[in-house]
Length: 520
Image 1 (cartoon, rainbow, N blue to C red):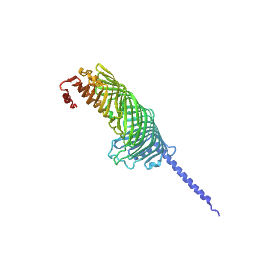
Image 2: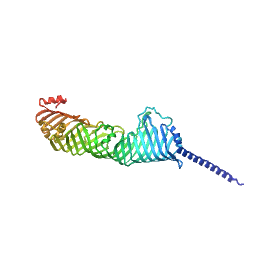
Image 3: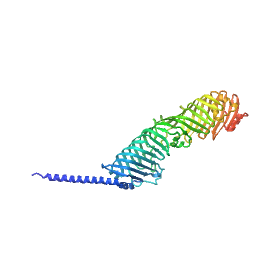
């Protein structure tokens, strides 16, 4: 006899159909529930109490394909320890979301496409654990992210517009770890502002970076800047003024820089949280004005800079500033003109986010070269004056900008120095050899800043001339004490706002008493 298998097979198929129908029905019901939760905002009300210090919301939400969610006017807000907070405003988004991951307190995506984004980040102060996480924190895994049209990126008082596209991925464990991989961005026309003041008008640019930051210690902070393991930013921009750059460098806040509108091109490379070799900067602009006591220096500018390797020593950042042509003005008009002045500055590279160190002037190419200079001394004018000024030891401080150090040089004669010391335009007749002494060699110490200029231990030698002195120009007046030897005759000279005083009797002793500097 045959075994009746047909009825058994039929019952099995019936069970599978029934199970499949129940499964499909449950899936469709779940999908319908998800749409109801999205459309009514109930999902946000369920999630927000579970999201420690973070709030999420949207105006419209729906899902056509299960697992793919569409939202409009999506907002995310989070309060950080120490008073910091951040927020995202998204116009429209399509996300391939893992619903099962939500039950494991993880927000995971396989793809996220955003149209229209605004980012606000306001860092807080370091905290002492007074806002510890409640329970298990939510994890964030955003893969396949594409953002079109970033309306604005705001970090504290800094605001950048013009980002047209961003791609990449991010993983976040709140207050423990953040990883951002293979980010690429494009910049179109936009603006960089600091405290609502325009610093630069961006023309175009590209960039990319990778970040890996971990919390250090129980109460440590996530050091995001040091976590930049690799990055590059290339852009071109125009500057409304050179002085506006003070907004980006707090140590320049007291500098009285004026004018200097121009254009810059930047190629910044980052490795392990520091500027890396290959970094390049160049730019140029209109006349910039730098005040120094009673004096005003005015000149168009050109700037070139970069980072270079130094063998086993730390990498060094170099900057070359060219001013051409240069005009130096006093209270009664133009004192000095030169076709070009060049200054080269060097410093060790520092970690991003740290104040830059004082930049040191090196001997390898750091010279102030003066050519074809016109100098006015009262009614006289010296043409085609030239010289070279070297700084074997000098420091440029960016806090209330000032230059301080030793200098030495050789010059045609002393005409510009007399012009600076006697800005009133008068000179005792007995000192006329100072103007004509040729092949002048000078050395001394200088401190030059916004509040004035001071020269000490000044030494000068020329044809038939020897000079010791010190001078300062501040608060609208110029003062100097000099010991001058013309031929074999020594003479003391004191210059004050009221005029000039000559010391004929024991001038060397007089000079040492006035200055405290022994004459060798």
